[in-house]
Image (tube, helix red, strand yellow):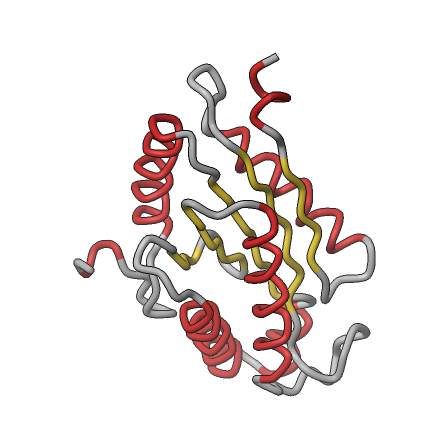
Length: 178
């Protein structure tokens, strides 16, 4: 991957590369009728982690979580990217809700297994993530922002329902075409 498409702090794809990859995957899914899934992963209570452990530890934490997300992916079409400061995106072309749930469960377990201490968390003694996702079959008149908005809603639900969990939803092709 070209340097301009890498996030300097984590070594995975940056937001620019994510946007390019999402546009390409969206067009492909519309054309082929295959499903597309998007997961947003947010590090739980990262602000308190940063305040307690400082910048170097926070940067190391972000790198480790990013590497963990990248290692979770098995197919060349899948993409892990830094979406915002402490928020990551996982784009899963050709993946339905069941496949996205498998990836989300793997990410939750693998991030916990990193065992990065987080003394200021009221969720767990280690760093955890919350995941929100959505799977759909894009149709021609459906705007691309739909999948982003629905995944963000599910992330919000995961954060406000206790953190350290995933919330996913799906839209059937028939529902979208009505």
